[in-house]
Image (cartoon, one colour):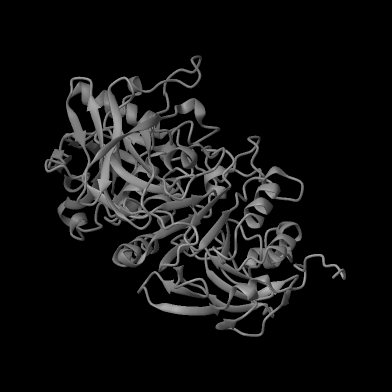
Length: 612
């Protein structure tokens, strides 16, 4: 009992060091006046979690029942999940060797009120919760607090809960490689290069299998740029592996599973997955693309976690899973999981999207909540990344960039060319990124790839979001003035952004003037670029300005995503679907021939000569 009391006291010391990251909303943990927490272990209180061993059938997530009792129950009592389970100060490493304990460990993963599913708790002192745990390379414990969030008192801590193999390979995510016939597979495990060899076993569906080795990356606390990522938000990320599957046949179906060969010749395998290889650039086949930003993550058990995104993030995820057979590739354009320095949230996000990302390429862009931190080279000097300064996004997901620290890249999917910008680095004329954007737009063969799409996190085009309208810019300052001549010159069809948490579509536009009077069926030349805000993936919604602009055709203060369907080289369907029901609420078609792309428009007319 004395040992347990020392561990509990260590937890209190750690909790007293909590720091809160800058965010669009309050972190639920920030509502806890944890510095006022006192040690109040009660021998008559208990927390019991069962089963104590999870994942016996190889699964990487499992529901756990938590039963608890307090002799002095209150409606303010709450339950918190910790991982690793041992929060004794002796297990923590000091950031500064001259600092005496308390030393910094990691924050709780989530919490819930004790009467959440037990309304009788205040009267009986007994309650229970169903909690979803995922495999995160360590064990768990559950703590009971009294005194509410403002005067918390630690009352009891549960037994440990652990997965049968906490090091198992988990949460594979596909991404397109640097060539059209290459697919990358990235996953997380607890096996370093001194313990096992990582690889992918794969092949044509029904055909022979081959093995491709994987590279292994990780990072430590010193890679973080500030708190909380470097302090209470820190959690060991394990090892991130990426393998490159090459020389794929266009549109062919492949099966794969990721594995590790331990140095004692034991093999550890994931489940088996499948994917369809990308089409050849210019290939005339049905091609379907889903795009959204700012989804975040949520807890299936209803627990309080970062920004309380429930339930929009899960709704978006579920809609994509339900329609996965009609989706070929996904673009999540920034503000990925809003971990904001709480590293454990990245595991939970990759677990949430696993059914999607393990089946179709899941391409990401960098947002402010992945990259921004003062003095680190980000274009904006805020603290939105919570000290991650891009390291998590750059490591947890693969993108075909020349340098993942510079998160801009191009990728081809059949008849589509996607130019993905990094708004957290300078994009203005004369910069390295500006040159990349122009090259990406200029180098595409529009006869073979007629559908040219520009993607970015922050709105570089047009938005009626109230915080942009207040500035009078209706977009990110300096965005349009640097880039609109490129969009016009190279005849970008659609530019899609996140950052503003709503949906909006403009007319085809150039220099604030609509270039086409049509609204839903565009025939022939667009004469401008259609700008779309698709930032309603799951994060708290953003208000529109009451001002009505001539270029805004459709606004929706709700959660959703967009889908592009290329039927052939001449016909494209755009749809906006709500996350709540998956139904289409806005759409338009483009129907044109190659000569319409070649046609001269304002700002895109090539030089001519009168010579015959």
